[in-house]
Structures are given as C-alpha cells and as structure tokens.
Length: 127
Image (tube, rainbow, N blue to C red):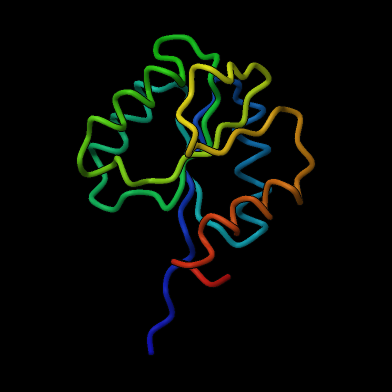
C-alpha cells in the first residue's frame, strides 16, 4: 500500500516571523507547509492549487483581508469549504466565529498546537 503524503497546512498570518516560526516547527513535526500573508493571498493560493491543504491555521487580525472575511469566502467556495480551520490569534471574538472552528489564543505552546492539529487530521492522516 503506498504511503500517503504528509498533510499540508496553509499558515495564514500577516507577521512574517510568526509564519516562518510556525512553518519551521510544523515541517519539523512532519507536515508540509504553505503560507500566506493575508486572507486574499490565501484565497488566491487555494484557487491556484489543485490540491487543497489538509488544514488552515488562520490569524484573524490582518490587513488587506482579515480572517473573518477569509472564513466567509472560504465557506462560499464549494471546493475549499471542507478544509478544517484552526484560528490562532491574539484577538478572538467568540461571537463572530462558527462553533465548529477550533480557536486557540496566541501565544500557544507548540505541543498543544500539534496535538490539536493531529486530533483534527487523525482520521484522515494517521500520523
């Protein structure tokens, strides 16, 4: 039986240091990583790639297109709407997000993030 490729995570955050640190950490944990600097960039990437990411890690407070608008656009896209999203943000408005989206507050302990990701992807990607 052929081995499944490692799950790919799309990290969406306007802070280049956060994107780089998350990418380095996730790669070390065995994931493939793409990154985007805002919601508009992320939507362009989702449209441009045939393969959708296994999961999106999303900041909420970003210029150009924030995380809230990105989520609205994502849910309107039949191809990408099923991609799980983990909110990783310093500012979380509990009332403005759907109940099914996992919300984590920055800063987060790295192993807690990996545990959350593996819990979400576990059924599809036994890691």
